[in-house]
Image (cartoon, rainbow, N blue to C red; front, side, top):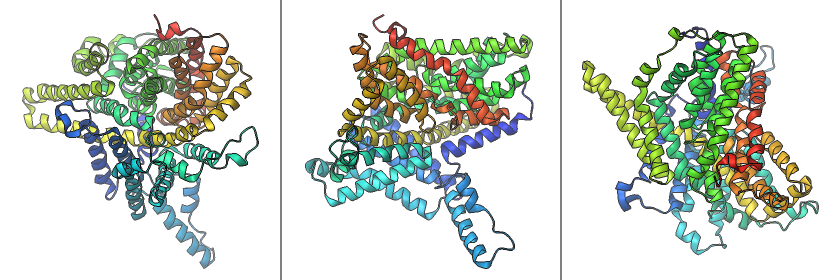
Length: 622
């Protein structure tokens, strides 16, 4: 098969470093080298043990303790992994050297700033970061530790409860800032201020203010705030699916899907781009992460698209659009899909079924776009002899389809819960990887010990990757729980009335308003947080106004409408990280790549309006 030029390897490495820094913090020196992987692996083992049916009553613990432990692991990992300052203008200003002819006091102050800059943005875990991790973990665990006492004095918190609750809220928002950027903490802080000082606002916004005691109790000592439904879904379900995707990637499944896509579509006009779309869709079935999808498939597909004749920015944008839509692909959609099931009180398989036709339409439309681009550019098909043979690819990677088929069997045929289905699929995948390594290495005379070591390394790396992939999601859903908790205290009705007033009671206006607001929030919020915020504020209004306009719209359709716009967060300029990762691989300009990817993704923005007014596309009552 045609191989990419060696030159793009530096771009792929730059993309990998970008994702490492933005997604995982990239702390890899000193105690971080072993402490972070150990904590991440311990988290994965704990989450695997919780749904294990053969452990019986040993781990049959209340969900409150699971939520608390989930948040403890997430927030501790964030403080261990992410420095207080990432590379940016603040860090650059602090690290700037003093002028040689500067006075002594200026050189001394600059030296202090340099030292602080190295500590705040360094790759080592400092003493203060360790202290913050311990304090944040203890505050997150407090609800579980004193659960019975808190339940007995419900509504009458002790001073100790308030202090711990305030510490948890502050440290959680700081953790969200480190892991996700400033947008989510700012939005959460605005909602907190709104709840505390609502009486001081103009009449249209005013309502009865909430006392500090009630606010802290709601957020940190109940399941209506930080420990609410989003965190519960993350702890019970999302983690296992993320771990399943990480294990599939570590055992070679991602590379198999890319090769399979090239074997199927690589020989058509603009074949590398069509294969990139299919490969990203197949990878998205088990990944659920736009950024991971770009780095996994893009390092291979983007250079081949460039070699076939696609301009760098269009090659990167095609990968961005395809990877972003990976969150729509069943059976493993983005983390928000599991939260949709809880919000709407429907089985997860119903969400999968509803999203299936729109997801397929989205990918078919993108394949057609790549065909039009190839026709405009006058591109030719890649000769079949330069492509991998379909039979050989299937024989080499058929074992990766076994755990996927088993997962679908558990979800669709056996109707197991999502968490139990994912648990058994993970065990099947681990067993399949062990058997494959034994057959390909042990039985071929290369040594059974080598096969066992490879299997152990793959499974160990999977446990670490599962924890590291989940820390940002865990912090995001907990911080978004602050917003949900505040809304449930009273502002929700006021906000709903404001949204209805702005839209003039017109269903088309509220849909456009929701779409625009989701895209604006997507500039700074990750997909899951974006969905939680918008679904809490607008989904009930959408359903109510649709009923007033004579449309019978299921609640699931309204939430999927919000979700489809929320997934565009990863490629919405100027923040879209997926576009930055793809641009690093393609050596293109990030902003132009993001804009082009966003243009390609407008097809995804049209679909929600189609299925909102024609729910047959969601296979409802069909």
